[in-house]
Length: 145
Image (tube, rainbow, N blue to C red; front, top):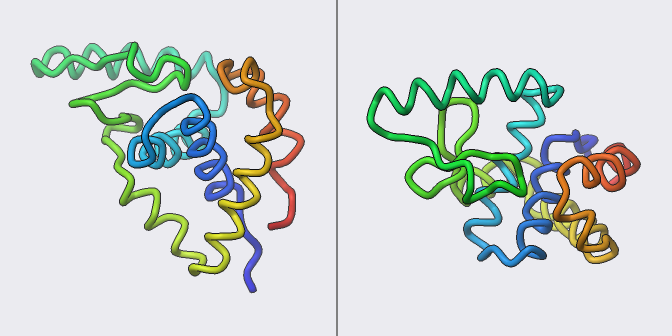
């Protein structure tokens, strides 16, 4: 069995974080994959902030402004009601495809690991991107699944 990398773990954690915060499952899966992509692209918030400004201006010029309120707790933009990062929107299908690359059994184990962690996490940590990163992601990103 291949070792599970950080990307699918982040996607699953973010999915279960979104579910715990009240998002429907399809939307939570889209948020999960978008968040994992964001973490892979943007290594720190000051780089993300500058890129976000340029990206927002570009889409506004096209007559399709980005919505930064819908997914504010995740520090994600929305375009046409879907999570948007890295120049594209994400859906639940993108999430499922990313996890199923590891096979159904491994995908189930990744999700069970993520669900258990999120259930043990206080709501104030789930609602704060920096706390989530510090208290959930950093200590557990290299956990075996």
